[in-house]
Image (tube, rainbow, N blue to C red):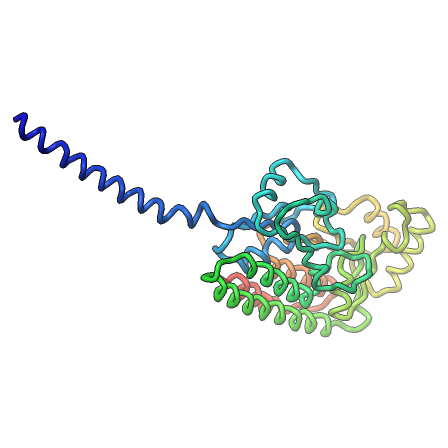
Amino acid sequence: MRIILTCSLPILAMRFRVAISGLALLGLAQSPASSSQLDVVAVDGTLCDLTSTLVGSAAHVTCLIPPGGNPHGYQLKPSDRQTLAKAALILHNGFDLTPAANKIFSSAPIVAVGEKVLPNYQGNDPHVWHDPTTSEGMVRVISAELSKILPDAEQAALTERTTQAVSVFSGLSQWGSAQFAALPENRRVITTDHRTYSHMADRFGFKEIAMLDSHTTGGVLRPSSLKAISDEIKSSGSLVIFKPSYEPTKTLKRISKRSGVPISTNRLEGEGVSPGETAVSTAVLNICTMVNGQNGQCDQASGDRLVNSWKSIR
């Protein structure tokens, strides 16, 4: 028995070591795919969805500002700084949409995507993505930046996703133009509290009345300002005052009462992506809310097809 035990134990030990080595090799073969995966940070709004759609599973995308969040007042948290320190690429809108983005320092590239698309823009509306053609340009810029950090094996898939994404935004631009063109000319106007949709207005040929930006100083609504705003709204062809994603303020209610123009029951999402939505579905919702609010007939079915095309990008 002693001889048998003495002979068999080394054999069993050797087999055990071989088995463990095999498992270890399997683990080593699998671990780099997750442990070495690239980290990309998209700071604000629509960029999160654009980046996640383009990158697929080739990198991990962290969106600092969640859907429905306010990019203007966002403050970097300690956990954000840790995330930023690990990032291979950092993307933000630019045009001071998120002032906190100006405080980001990193060895990774920091790209103001909107500013790259519109290098000559001198206006004061940072919400550039509401023009689908600008969003199309943002897709191209993000894709170009991703191509610099993704491995060769991911380049073909990135190119294919980029082509599909560009096609969807091109379709969105054509569809949106058709929705506003169907409105009578005197109803191609939207009234909001602050300037948010000037880029969309320029693309689709309607007028944006940004009441508080045009008639107040420091947000203070004086009696003379209230009269001026009310007179402008009544003569503009506005049938409703479009409210932002948050509840209408007392000021908005005062303007509505004075002008006799009701506040829309449907909200607009001006600061990024609505909770539970994508960049494209948020754009379709906004456009249909505007057109229907002005007594138009938005082609929701065609808009939904664009939404589904966006969701199908893999």
